[in-house]
Length: 98
Image (tube, rainbow, N blue to C red):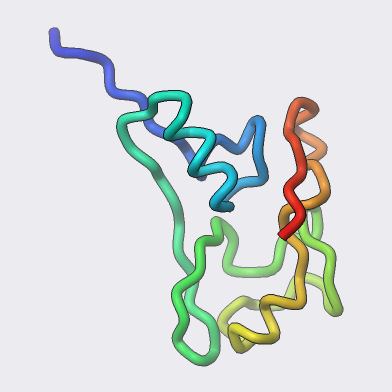
């Protein structure tokens, strides 16, 4: 049997906000072999890391609710904060100001 490979699912979402550079850096520092992320596309065709096709109101604050990422331009999407509030399912997660 070969070596067990460790995947950083959405970075290291149990301890950093998912799909953020902070989560990816933390996972790499912890020694993962792979980073896993999902991508969405904005209205102006910019790729962004997001597991959900809609703004996730559980982890994001912003000017609107659960709107489709594809309906927002990149500039509009940047008005949302999807890193500073902790995900309620991950009590050890540290928020990151974005």
